[in-house]
Image 1 (cartoon, rainbow, N blue to C red):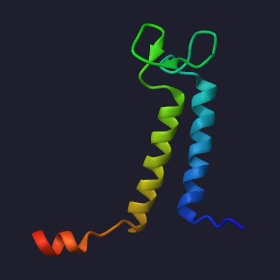
Image 2 (tube, rainbow, N blue to C red; image 1 turned 45 degrees about the vertical axis):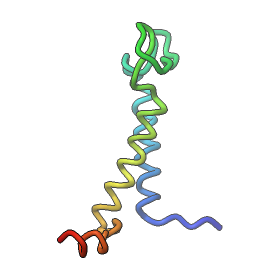
Image 3 (cartoon, one colour; image 1 turned 120 degrees about the vertical axis):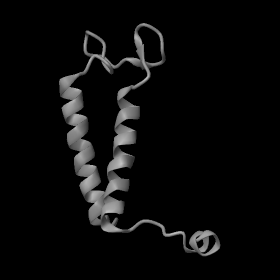
Image 4 (cartoon, rainbow, N blue to C red; image 1 turned 90 degrees about the vertical axis):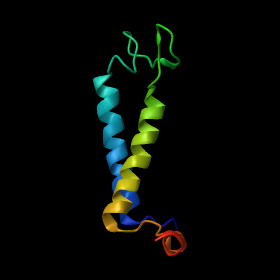
Length: 84
């Protein structure tokens, strides 16, 4: 059985909700006028912020933020011992 910690559960829920809201809103930055996804690129009908990249970055950011909030980040004790 796969065990998920609370941070991961919250991050998945936030990611699913954000994905749904963004997909339903269909911002011009990520979607064409017909509702299809714009492809990645910098030309006229492309975008540097496609849906999959925005959702991926949002997922990592939410999870990392939850880790920092809980104090479960990596402490660099060796680095601190050497330089501080």
